[in-house]
Length: 259
Image 1: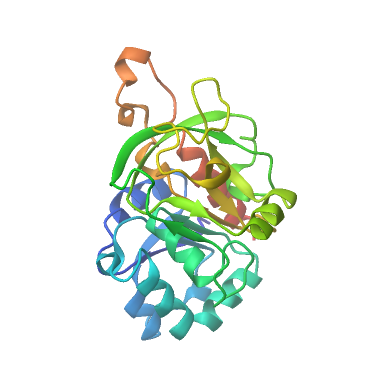
Image 2: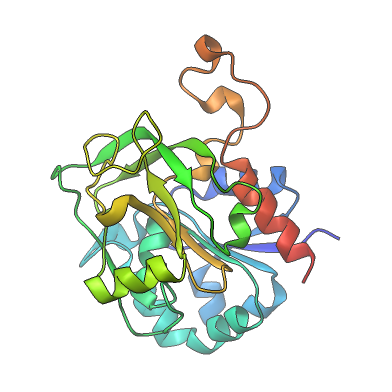
């Protein structure tokens, strides 16, 4: 039986269709669920095995990117989300979804309501829409099983993607191996240099997980590269097989199916 994936939406979400397609391609049974449906209890998070918060600009990113949706989740759905996470069910936040997870406190340390990190405006001072190279680190993350050490490509599209955390938090993230993706240069080395690092993230952080590895947030968009034809140079480079982002969804679905 296919695991059911809750694809959480709100006003301003705009990457839901692509993410729905990626989940289907990976073998899930995705359902688009508006946050108001969860608040009204017409949909229950406990009926799903996987939660995905896709990219976009929820509520116009007013106040700060992802903040309003994060406040909604913590104010009205804290118990349901805490129960979902405690059950070991995987949670994926992409771009705006990553911003939401950080502002809820679920990342980096599963401290609902306590914000320990931030995704702040890009150093370039502008919206960055480009393809980047990422190194997959050795971590407990269930979404990247079998990918550690690989350099992959994905697109980014954000204005507030620069990861920041106080030094003690960064040290803890490194010690616990919670940095899942890093921006790298052409030689595959982590870099702070623009444009390989499109936003100036500390330690070249592009994505992190919680200590258990079941909650993942990343700024790049895996759903935008699940088929080779989505790469801008697929003909020139002779790219075939699967897009690099599909493995993230396949791993998530496989893990959720085993719960």
